[in-house]
Every structure is written in C-alpha cells, then in structure tokens.
Length: 545
Image (spheres, helix red, strand yellow):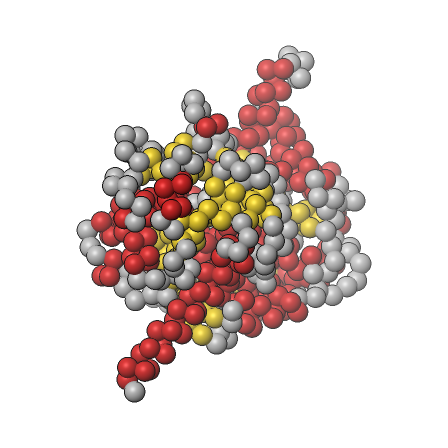
C-alpha cells in the first residue's frame, strides 16, 4: 500500500516547505524507496503560467508540458526524476474538473459542495500522484500557510485521508518559523503553538515539527514545543538556515528524520545512502576556482524568477570544482549605460528568458558586448533569440532586425511567431510546452557539449522561432544552426563560428540540470568561462612580469 507524508507550513510563507519536502524525498529515495511528490497550490489560477514572475517566481515546466510552481524544480533536482502534470494541482484545476463533471451530469443532479465533491477530487489527485509513478511513498506539500482561507479544502482533504487509512500509512510534517526578537535576544515559540492549534482545528495533528530559524535552537525550546504541541521531543527538529539548500537533506538525516519516518510509517529497517549527495555538497563547499557570471534579465530583483538557472549554474560549477559568483544585471540598465559600466569584468554572460519588449534593447547590448569582447555567452530561450537579432543587425547587415513579438513591422523579422501559434487567443497553456527531441549537428560546440549524442531531449516554453527564410543570410556571416527539430523545421540551437563559446538554445536547458548531472550546455558554458578566466589571469601575470 502507498503511504503518504503531508507537509504543511506555519507562521509565514516561504518558510522552506519545498526544500524540506524535497529533502525528505531525497532521504527516502536513498533508502531504495520509490518516491513521488505532489504540490497542492491553493491559488485559483489553473497554473502559474500567466502569473508575473514578481508574484510567483519562475514557471517550471515538466517534460509532459505542465506549467507548474517552482517547487517542482526542487523536487526533480533532489529526487533526480522527471515529474509530470499529475505532480502539481491547484485550486483552479480542482474546481475546473468538478465543474466539468457537473456539466456532464456526473453528480445526478445533486448539489455540488466543498465537502464531499471538492475534497474527493483533491484526494483523487493525491492518490493519482502515487499511482502514476508506482510510488511507495507520496509526499504532499500544501502551499501557503495554515490559516489561509484558500488552503482550507486541502487541509480538510488531508484530514479525511488520515482517518480513512491505517495510522501507519500517513505522517504529518509541519514546518514553522521561530521568530527572533532582537530586543530580548530570544527565539519565540508562541507562533508555532498557534499554528499547530490551527492545524489541529482541521483534524490534523502533526507528527513532526521542523522549526526554521537563523539561530541555534536550544533543547529547552524544543522541549517547550514538544509539550505544548503534543509531539515527541525527537520529532521536534531544529533546522537552522544552511549555507546551501543542498545541505538540508544531510541536516535532516543527522537530526534523525529517517528514523522518525521509519518508525511512524512502519517501514522496513534500513539506512539512507547519501554518500553521492554528500560528495556533491563537499565539492560545493570547497571550490578550487571561481568564475564570475553576469546573469542578465528583467526580473533580477527577484532571484526566484530565474531559480532553475541559478541552480544549473551551481551544478555546472561543482562539476568543474568551481564556485560561481553571480552578478545580477537588470537589462533595462543596459539601455541607459554602457555594457562596460553595467556588466564590467566577468568571465561569462548568461542572458535569461522572458516575454515582451521591456529591456529588450538592453539584452541586445549584452549580446553585443559578449560577442565583441569574446566573452563566453549562453542564451536561454529569449537569450537565443536576442543572439540572432544582434548578429543580424551588427554582423549580417540587417539594420532594425528584431523579433516580431517586439516589432511586428521590423524590416528583418529574424524571429517570428510559430506557425501553430497563429490564431491562438488564450494565453494559459497554449505555448510550445514540454520536452521535445533536438537533432544535433556534428562538429559543433553544441554537439561536443552533449558528448557527441546525435539527439537530445530538452524542455520548451515559447511562441516564437528563428525565421528560416532569413537563416541563409545569417549563416553566410558565421551563424551556425547547430540543433534542429527532427523534422528540420525548427532551429533549436545556434552558435557563432568565430567565437570561443557563444551558444543560444531555444529551449530551457536549466530544467534538466541536476546535482551531479549538470545540463551539458551549462557545463560547457562554465568550462568556457573557466578557460576565459585562465587566459585573462595568464595575460595579467605576463603583463606584470
């Protein structure tokens, strides 16, 4: 029988439930168990695809084309598996499905209510997340904070599930914040107590409480939480803020999380094998070199807007035994100041994805700076399109070349709307989404980066593409289309012939990067940045001598 672990959060949002959930999943997988994770998002949007990154961070895309919360990225990276749309559910999806069934007449004319119809649909989706992967254990993370009005149906469904199965088949983990009062120099447990009381009001008694804090948590505080929240002392786990999210599985394992779960869920006795994970963390902590990478985008005030990119750079750095120093650059700053001033002295430039024309000219300025200064460059989705636009304008003799997304009347539409996107009116879930194969051209940087593989699979989220009608003019000047859709219709990767490393991908390579298995384009990019850094250091040493 599948067992379920429910993870809720208290006191404040963004307390770290996603990382705790992913870390518990990693621990369980290291014991040889088959693990699936489901994110329950209380918002009424069907998915985050139409949300602003400022509100929701990045939109993570699964291989089967679902636009999901960024926590799905943490789950995939920590578990090392590909999840699917069945691993992400929102209030909008739940109500949409119940209303669809009502319109079909599935409820025989009955009155549709939150209980049982909405809660039954939530429970069906929880079970489906385990069935899709044949999981031994399903981790279910409830978004938001206990006490939020929109999260109540999810808590009710969890309560019903806990009482409908044997006690040893479910476990509840509650993640809370211990606020620190500077005036009295103490951590306070009262908010956690109130949060647990609120959770109990839905019939959910936590079995484990993970307390988040920026400071060490004394045993006396854990004893107080244990007493007032009716949780065993060893199940009150203090999780102090770590230097890296990748340390959290090791912290939880050292605190006894694996044993607690084994006891509560009546699992066979075993031990967690986290040696490969521990090796990654040790290399992350002790880099032998450092590269400085400019990350150029228009949402850089919120780093979560580019979360998977940041993690993919870390993975690639660790693979090269190098630390990655990120220099966040707002693309609009490049429209009023020079690239030399804004980007300055870096070893590589990564141009981020995005939509719309805000900051577009600044992105093109970043491309030109990388091309002219021979700085390693990786263009991600829109970053690939801007590479093509800049090259067309300043090398291929196409003044005013642009994407028709920004300028429908451009004389040289080197980037244009996908043919299947013409006439599409709805914005949600209508882009080219999910995993598609890419055929690599031999003897190119992309082909070498992927180890000579003839075909690879990467994930997409876009509406525009390279205009093949203008491609021959670009190729004559040194642009190489090094990756294609298997039917030869869509350009997937471009690179420059006369540049040490200038590559752009129409897909999102960051979505398939994993600790210990970095995405090949990110690995190649960081490798080129290290070579560039080494050349500069040798040149500087020579000039000093």
